[in-house]
Amino acid sequence: MSRGSFPFEDRQDAGIQLAVRLAKFATKHPLILALPRGGVPVAFEVAKALDTQLDLLIVRKIGAPGHEEFGIGAVVDGASPQLVLNEETVRQLAVGQDYIRAETQRQLAEIERRRKAYCGDRQPIEIEGRTVIVVDDGIATGGTMKAALRGIRRNDPASLILAVPVAPSLTIRELSAECDEAIWLSTPEPFGAVGAFYRDFRQTSDAEVIALMDEARGFGLQAARAATH
Image 1: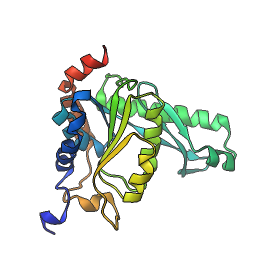
Image 2: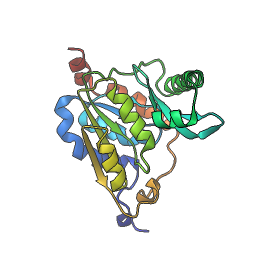
Image 3: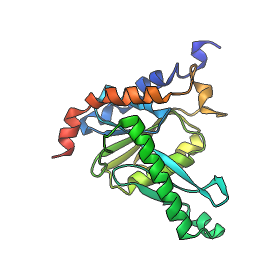
Image 4: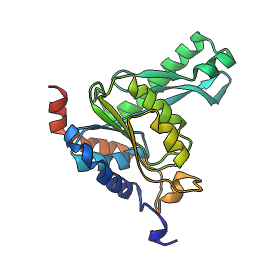
């Protein structure tokens, strides 16, 4: 298949293209949050182009008792981690609070482990009062992203933006209700899988995430100063 058949060469290319659409936010010194692992190379290019801070947003699903693949909620990390539950599902399955508390602690521990692996001892960047742009390499059903946006909203950002290279139009419409603005590059139909729209969609490695997050430490010094005043 020729290069022209794909909207994106790879995640770096997608990030460069997405950064053009997000340039209007540069003066707000936004905080870019990447969903690892695949979202990190995309978000890195956005943060680099806007010269602004980059951090991770790790979301861990809470599964139903005995059926961990069936999500009843999620834990969203950050300076103030949030538990986002599907309250209707919790009621229907009569899931007890003890189970939810135990699972929340288990997922928080996994979030801490992953964050330390990717970012060392760096603490999550505060969200409150910031323009926050959440970036992934693409969205299919949107369940994880919906939890992510709801978790971030509880930490009172000044503005919450969703930015992705590719997603189904229906998913974009649904997620637009969870943020102040949604920005995307392509909504192909039929959709299929995110990887179908990248010529190179090889798995992002842990080593790549670590290297990019380390390089991004030099981004956004002006944003960091603005956030503390």
